[in-house]
Amino acid sequence: MMPGPSRWLETFRTPRLRPEFKFRLDDGTPVQVRPLQPEDAQRLRAGFEQMSQLARRRRFLADVKDLTDNQIAEFTRLDPIDRAAWGCMNRERPREPGVGVARYQRINGDRRSADVAITVLEEYQGRGAGMLLHACLHLTAHRASIRRFYYDMLRDNQRFIGQIKALGGTFEGRAENIERWSLPVYHRARDVPDTTSIGRRFSEIMLKLGRPPAA
Image 1 (cartoon, one colour):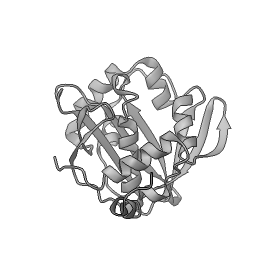
Image 2 (tube, rainbow, N blue to C red):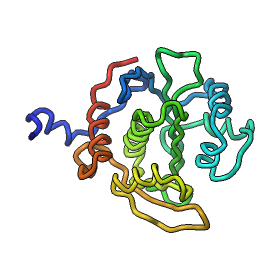
Image 3 (cartoon, rainbow, N blue to C red):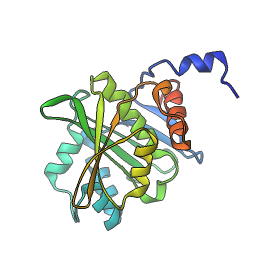
Image 4 (tube, helix red, strand yellow):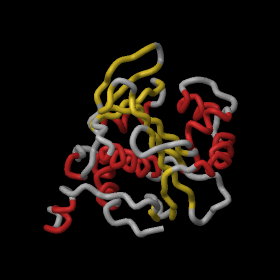
């Protein structure tokens, strides 16, 4: 079925993210979405404590047992140009650390590229939280003139590698058990490959980000 005229036009528009907004995950879970702030340091520590060793290894590409104060400071001292991070929390369970975090950091010597890392607590995986935060990163990066994202992933992280492939990712190389992939920075639904269910979901989220309710 072809989309209606107004919806078709929306696919050509670049959504402008609100500073903070409400959203619903695929299963209806209501979340609050906004950039990370220094006062989120304790939530980051608590979320890290809830991660399994496998999840920590996939996020940090090594067996990490603790987050240092310097790491926490790096994760929360951000700017919308070279380093950005978005997080979301369950509005119905505000005492939880959160649902997930996605961040990018511009690559030194390449102003048009950035490295990306995305973490979603295991309880919330498979509900669309990672895709939501990923889309927020794309829109933020595009406004900062970043045009390509890079991802370093363990080879056994086939789920995320499959998502990057489905979104038009390019394999850049491998070092031991770590693969490096890249992806164009998308800023409108029209540009997202829609030949897979993952691509169509990502495109749909970008459309929704153009009209989320304010927090």
